[in-house]
Length: 334
Image (tube, rainbow, N blue to C red; front, side):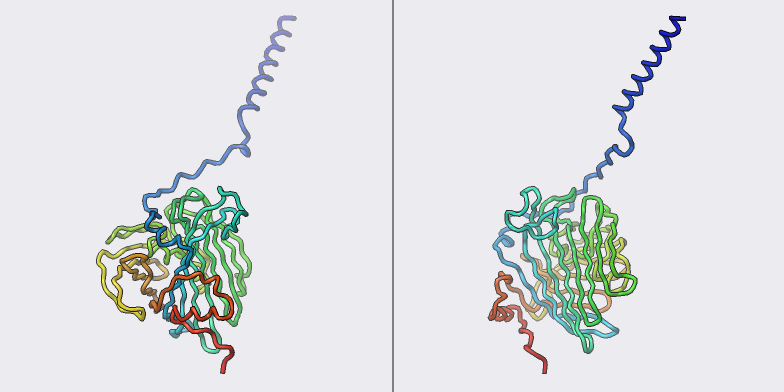
C-alpha cells in the first residue's frame, strides 16, 4: 500500500515536471514570431555611383518645363507641366524630408524626389494636379535601392479636391485617400506589395534609370504594376495591381521638341489601362524629352534649369521663370 502511494506521488511529480517544462519551452501561438519575408531580388536595382552623385549632389534641383496636352471631358486641353527632380535626406519613420538633427542617423536615408505639376484649363475652370514620388537611393525596408518609398497625389479644381498617399513598407503598402466624390470620401487601406512589383507613380523616375527594375537595351520584362494615384482618381477606380510589360528600345533616334533636337531612346510601359512612352535623352542627365500616353496625353520639353528654387520665393524671384520659358501668373484677369 505504501509502495503504491509512493508510485502515485512519483508519477504525479513527473507529470507536473513535464507540464511545467512544456509550458516554459513551447510559446503560445500569439508569441510565435511571424516568418520574415524572403529578401527582394536586387539584381535589377539601379546603381547610384560617383557619376550619379557628381550631378545630383550640388544642392540644386533640376526643373524642366513641358508643353502639355491632356484629354479631359472629351477634348484635348492645352497646359503646362513642370517636373522637379532633387535629392533629399528622408526620415523612414516620418516619411518626410528630415530636418537636420531631428532624427537619428539610422532613421535617415537619401532619396530622389520628383514633384510633377500639371496645370490645364477645362472651360471656365482649371485643374492643378501634383504628384510627389520618392525613390530610395540605398536599400531600405528590405527593398533594394531604386524602390519607391512614398507617393502622394493631389488634384484641385473648381468642383473640389482630392488627396491620396501610398507608403511602401517591407511587406505591405499603406494607402490613405480623401476625396470630395460620394463613395470615396475617406479611406485607409493596406495593399499587398509583391517583391518584384513597381508602381505606375515611379515611371518618370524609372525611365531615367532612377527606379527599379533596370532593363538592358532591347529588353522586355513583365512585372506586377500598381495603378497610379492619378489614374485611380481620374477613372474612379480602386488602386490595384495589374500586369505590365516594361520595355526599353534598342535603337536611339532623333526627335525635335520646343527645346531643340535630341537623341533619345524609348522606355515603354503597357498595361490594361494604357500605354505610356517616355523618350529619354541618351546622354546624362537623361532627361525626359517627350512623353505620350494612351488617349492623347503628351508632354514636350520646353526648357531645363538647375536652381535652388526654394530660395526664390520673394518678390522678384519670378524672374527665374524665364529660364524655364514660363511667365508669371497675371495679377488679375481682364
